[in-house]
Image (cartoon, rainbow, N blue to C red; front, side):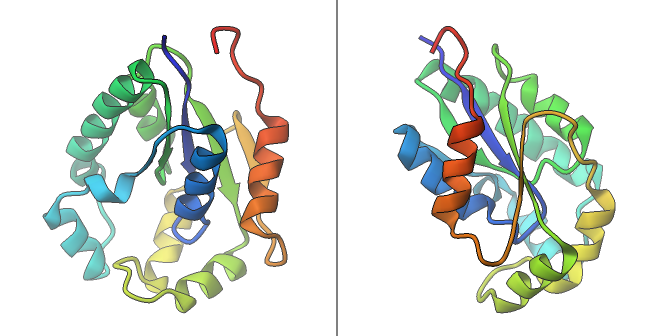
Length: 170
């Protein structure tokens, strides 16, 4: 039986990993972080403060699309992935038989910047935020969650669950 794959998307520091992990636990399905699929060269490039190009992302997105197809066949999953451009989202969707369930974590520049400054030991620095915000093509579909500094991750997941409508095959 095929199951839905959720993609929790947004710019760096929007909480994709935290929210995605909690959502996966709530749904009882595996969690995956797209950052774990980046090549060493891509990680080094981002760590140096250089934004990735579409060409840099091609192999990464293709690998994620293939994984999505497998996760769908094995009961579903939650993927935390920036998926900043519509073209990237189309590539990811191309790996699935069913529509992916998109969850867009939308936060103000100030909130995201403060979160990035508070991060320790992560290759994505606060100096990369503007590049991500400039690249972001907001989706007009899926579940959109507006982040606020006083909302807990559990409250965000509860909002996602209220907005989620399972497909008839689930």
